[in-house]
Length: 256
Image (cartoon, rainbow, N blue to C red; front, side):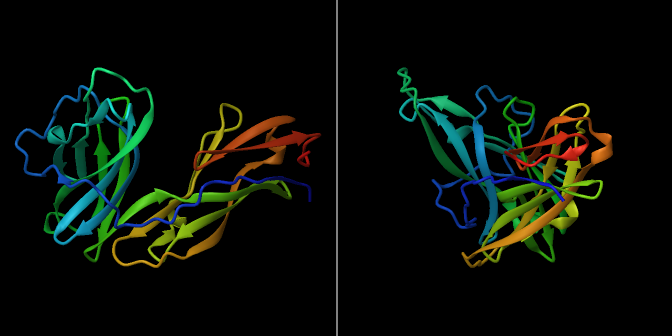
């Protein structure tokens, strides 16, 4: 069996649910929170959700373009719960006429609502809906415990052949006891004849106390059939990381 081994090194981050923030902002009861036009939507870098007492809080990291000239417009953050969708508007504002042209980050905490407002089942957090900077995050309550989804951190990715099957063998890192691999929701989309194949490997983060130990898990995903691909180089994208492989004479070529 010939193999093409591609090593992808990424920054491994231990997910910590209790993060620092600049104050709880927004309210699910804001009268003007629904259908608000966002003039300057923020660029969202990361989102986590945790409970703080009776509150359900989204910790949102925003990319700031000009650390001394732009900031999050905290007074204009709005929250609206509509069924299973929780829509949050997070705008930025210019705080100085001089653009320092550097990039920084600002983290804010937005109260989505009280725990008793959420029943068991799945929800979707949508930030800056209707803009080109929309971000979404799936979360759920199960037996009154909060969980949210995130993409696993990819450590290595290996393309290999098993008979006629083309397999993607991925090693992912899980940060702490709160993060578990979500095997049931691994997805493979796209096709090699039209574009790239995209593999998404999610995890579930459980709210509450967690250890900070890093653990590793392996995931094997079938991504294609050798006899269906022409000779050439192809790309698999797993959780945003590109993994190329080459077919030569109908077989998986060794990586040079």
